[in-house]
Image (tube, rainbow over all chains, first blue to last red; front, side, top):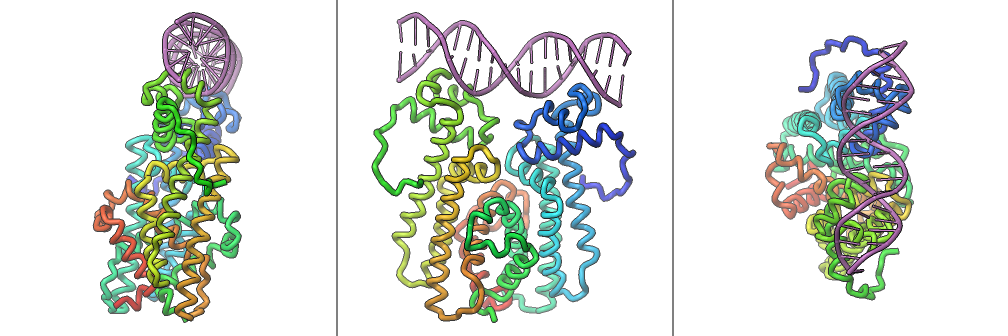
Length: 212
Length: 212
DNA sequence: GTCTATAGGCCGATAGAC
DNA sequence: GTCTATCGGCCTATAGAC
């Protein structure tokens, strides 16, 4: 379960924390299997045996790293949601833009979660990542319905589809960052996610043809 | 270079072909590092040493598998492009829909390419996958511009952005298949990519507000 | 072209001293 | 809580018979 309970953990020892940091970066970059306890130990500047003192197994270490990554994004998105503007039309647009910025603020965690959804490392992990995904998804559906309600358009476009599209556009931007620089035509918005969010949202709302 | 030259390869031996098939499925499912020569040999029903007779190294085997996957998708998309309808408005929409169907027709190859773009396995591999991506991307930009030209809207939306969105929507649908079934709200279009394409395209063109 | 046998290395995990 | 030393296993790759 994603920790809404804000009971801070008992302030991890320095050693354990540096292990978690090193593990996060390697698991995120290479995946569970390819990241080795050896290299994590080296980067964390502890011995391999020390890792096994703090964590029962490689799997357990991975689970905790993944959990922290999910919490990080979940908390970040919750904060965004609480400081959304009042006007329903703006709320969806702002959340869309801020959602992308959350992903980009924690690229390593985001990448780890993306990996977890792609590979099937562990049953618990998949559930965790899916829960996060479905949480964000529900939030956006509500915001879409909110904005639809105000405009009273009831135009037949279902909110879940639009929500799916919005999440998808941000995820795709995130994962395409690495190759965007090799696509000269689209270089404009590589360094400007704000511009990207703005353009995509307006396009979705106003439509390709109707654009002013 | 993506083989436009249609000189068929010299009809691979049965053994080598079954190795390539087994390798494709494991590399796609687990990634380069996690897939082992042992399991590939077992699935291909040959000995491990036999693999090293046909391929100089694990890397070489991977390269060839990746190359075939890229060619498969490239050829498939080229075929689609050649049998597009005449009306410019329909061309883009049809290509968009067919692009998704290509991805879904070769899910294992598509997944392998996606993995290659995510991990940094080999320099050659990345180039290959990027070339394919940029190829598709260019095709779609042309189709967008074509349809824009006809409508003479010149409305300021840049073709590369729309092309990026279209490719992104299809890639995201592809990679979300596994978790879509866990999102009850969106179950409608899991089994119907045609419906998804139709809805997304219309939404993009007509816009959220303007929808009939 | 196919095999068995094996070399040599890195892996996850543990034992046991401090 | 941290370490060195080590075990057993799986890995890529090769040697050499058929």
